[in-house]
Amino acid sequence: MSDRGIREFGLDRELTLVAGLEVRLVVDGIASWGIEWDDGPTVDRMRGYVAAVRTRRRRAAPPDHRLDYRRRQSPRAWAARAIALMRDGSSARAIAVGAARRRNHPAAQGWCAGALTPEDHALLDLVQRSYEAVANPERVDRPEDEALIARLLVEGNASREAMCRILNDPDSGQLTPGRPVLRLVPGDPGH
Image (cartoon, rainbow, N blue to C red; front, side, top):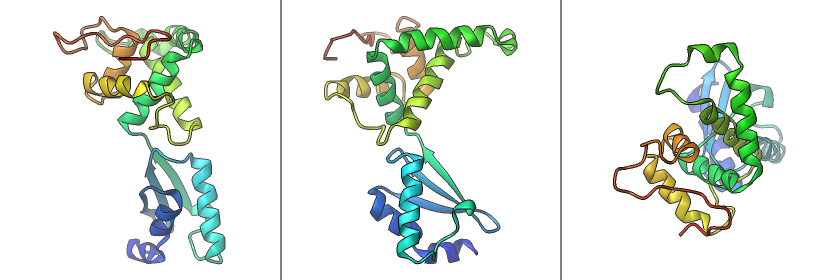
């Protein structure tokens, strides 16, 4: 089926209505399609939406084995998950364990100066796992986190790597000169 033919199915429009956010259907090759969306529902939830739509349409949709589900992560979702994790006391231990594992890996010997640190990689992994497990990851866990998320996005220029460096080492010089340092303090409302 061609790109035009799959769009005539209207599956992307119907999924957009069901999921409550824009869902894109793209042709990946011969009889293979990708379903793409930003943040929002988990991959498992989207599979459920597709199954429900397929049932309503009496199977008039591409079979599941022909679909590739791609949930895109926005910088805001990354920042929201990172702030939520940094507030959790167990994240420091998880980052330390992940960093130790990376330092002991043979590939760690080739890291160059200025690259992401093992702690940065561990935080990136931790945030990614949190993102995959949570529906609507762009939403704040606590209302007072909104100011921290907005500030982290500005200070980190919406770059995961830059935001990661800020959260792991606020004195690293990644912040804009003359601007206050972003620090997460347990129990601090973030103002």
